[in-house]
Image (cartoon, rainbow, N blue to C red; front, side, top):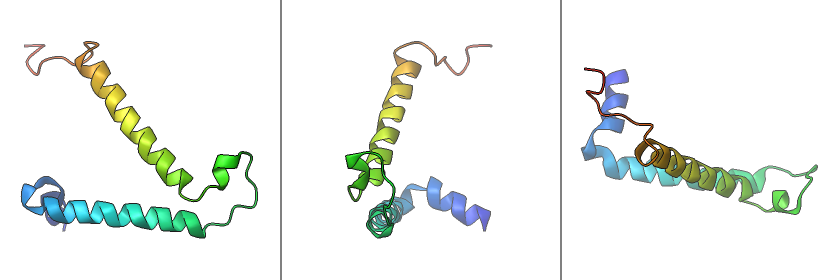
Length: 84
C-alpha cells in the first residue's frame, strides 16, 4: 500500500493523475468554502466565498518563493558535499 502511494507521488508517469487530483481537491475546498456558514466575521473579506482558499494558496506560493530565495540567493543552502 505504501509503495503504491510513494510510486504515485514520485513517478512521472502519474503526473497527469496527480494534477487532476490537485485540481479536484482545490475545487472541493472552494466549494466547501461556499457551504460553511459565516456567522461571526470581523472583516469584510472574511465574508467573501473562496477567500480562505485563495489566501491559503497564495500564502503557500509566497512561502515557497521566499524559502527558495533564502536558500539559493541568501546563501543558506550549501552544496551536497559541503562537509566532506
